Image 1 (cartoon, one colour):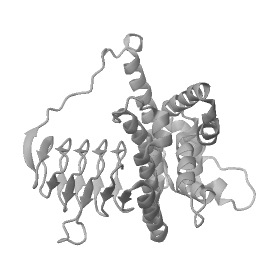
Image 2 (cartoon, rainbow, N blue to C red):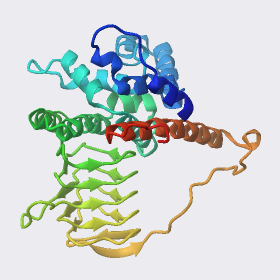
Image 3 (spheres, helix red, strand yellow):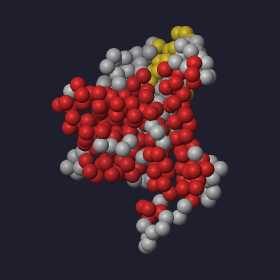
Image 4 (cartoon, helix red, strand yellow):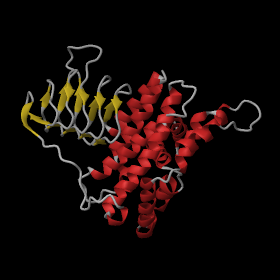
Length: 331
């Protein structure tokens, strides 16, 4: 994939005049990205066609936001643009803004966010299609990632507009300067607040009513840093510039103002360590590395892993180009 990517990126298009869009190298990366067979998007298309067979009245929504879209990100952009569009910022302008701002690293994070929304939703009706169409936390995350890119580009006014719109529409007040990794399950039913200097690691779970805020006594870097795999239960508050260790759990209604060790389970007001979790490896019913002897879950896992590995190569090339490197062939 890397050899193919490098060859196509280095090709000089035969165009006349100055066309910055055609000559833009990031566009070539996006075209290469669309040529990767996306198993998650294929699953969503199959689910949409199945729903269409059983519920024909859902046809307009499914055709508009899913079946006529070329990719998962395009579908998310279409849905969200129509949800938060206003007279000041109509859906067509929002759609162009979202697709223009999201980078490949955001694309892969959104794939992980969708997977998290499906796997960690306790509802029996949880499907990738339902998460795409109706999961408010996922939609809030997409808007945050757009606002974050705007913030990084110095377009703070528009970033604040996105934050304000998301806050009123989804009850999720996420500062555009916050840093959030992929694989986050965000439940915004009762409101969520994530402060400016907060950081959220990979594969975290944030339920309704959670606050990642400051104590009011600090300035500058004043918000918590959440490690990978942390679970924040409903109504929990983490306040101040503290670290929450990898895999920790903060139980419902707890107020945490001190450092939390890895794999600790804390609760109370103020929160204190009650116990520690055991780290267990993910397993399938069959662990054979041979595809012929691998069950369905194992085969799907490998399919997603191969897709994400290929996707990650394009993300590394994009990151290299963003750093201003002249030769990204080794990325």
